[in-house]
Length: 337
Ligand code: PYC
Image 1: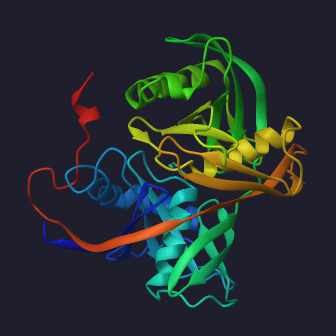
Image 2 (image 1 turned 180 degrees about the horizontal axis):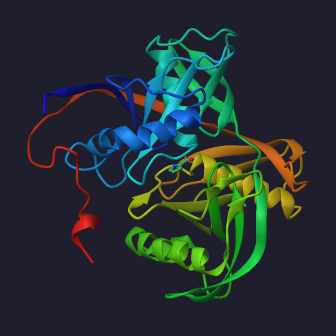
């Protein structure tokens, strides 16, 4: 095996890592980023594993591959790489990657103040504010987000009977609000929430079929959102998002915040134009907003949410992948029952 080299910009969005590969990503066939995501998974998933898992990454690593724009009106394209796989959409990684691309001069937006990004889930439009060469904030408008099911009864191995809403914001989330059997995320350790999140995902997938009404290839729950009381007055609610088997989001989660905006709108708790400050495990915040209301092709009510957050560039790196032990990464999860 010859040496493969990947250059990256490293940073974080509200505490959650973003490793953006700016050199070394493979050319991919396909007319859309979704087709290219599938091609990547089929032939190049070793790159994701090598860059996200140990020893180059860790269980909570997250990143993107930066590509030139695919469609005429876009400024850039992104493929999301996570410890859990290749998500169609990732909010915190979009905010980070847009910030880094602007700060590093990788893009010159066609319309200053706006960045259009081709991603597997569709097209994202984002606005940004810059100050002295640094991006202060990015707000992206997400894909149509909606409450798929409300008040689903789930038998959870630890908590017993829980009532959850299942909402979509680019990924599906069972949203666990405070209730008699769940006093709030602040009462538990991150490790407990991670373990119980895995159990929640399995329990939901066993109980109910979760499928995107307009795109049946988007199915099943691979995340969990535990909610709770905010830790500062400036926030409206708190959420700890578990993604896949091993990742706890340090940010309030962009797709999770979109899903919660849709859930709150559907429940009459958030009106069109209203904002919602969502706080993470570590106290960082995203501001979600209902930009407009819409409908899915099958007639289900949906919203177009936007999410605003901040990202910081922390350095640059060059990663080598060559013949050596654990060349394609490992996860401790793979060594336990
Ligand atoms: O910010 O959308 C997000 C996200 C998904 C998984 C981890 N973060």
